[in-house]
Image (cartoon, rainbow, N blue to C red; front, side, top):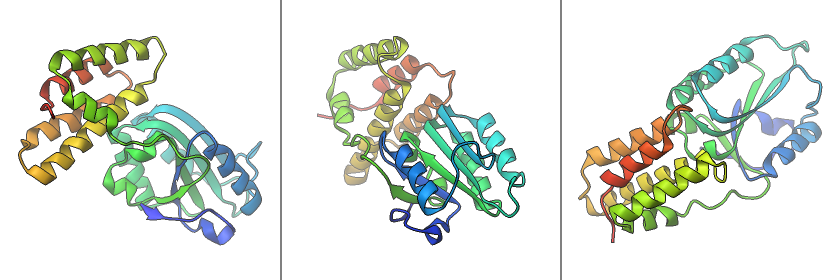
Length: 234
């Protein structure tokens, strides 16, 4: 991602797509900066769209593409899209990539949420990154390291507990998504250093992460598969 400072004036909004990192304060601060620095009306403005998704899928991405292609209501005005998502499916990311490669003039997108941590490299390279508000919880990989050190029995017990907590709404699917991403990263770093990891294992785990973005995917089945194929790490 292109590193970007906080927005201070209109000239800072030269890019067409931003990834906004931050926690619960990020949205409020973004709205404030849009209103003050760029004089954007965020309430009752047909050229301002704010949407929230747990998982942004291909249908939602196509809908956004259709909306951004339409003319603004204000003559010569800008259209602003603020999109919050916990995750974005791989097909949806590819759709967004095509849209950002040929952006509609005077249209700007802001992606907020955990989704900005799990973007495909080609999409990530199209975004300008800025940090607002509190930082999101650190993705240290500690959970992945513990998971990889567990026996298969211990892993499956952890998977069952996490899946049950998600089903009971004590936790969100995002936590399962983040765990797979951390496991994938930990194994990738291990393979870079030691070169002893079969490449098909990383491919299988990458596929599980992509499938996890599907709203109909079984969290328990995907995590169980990862628990069985991921090599144990002492």
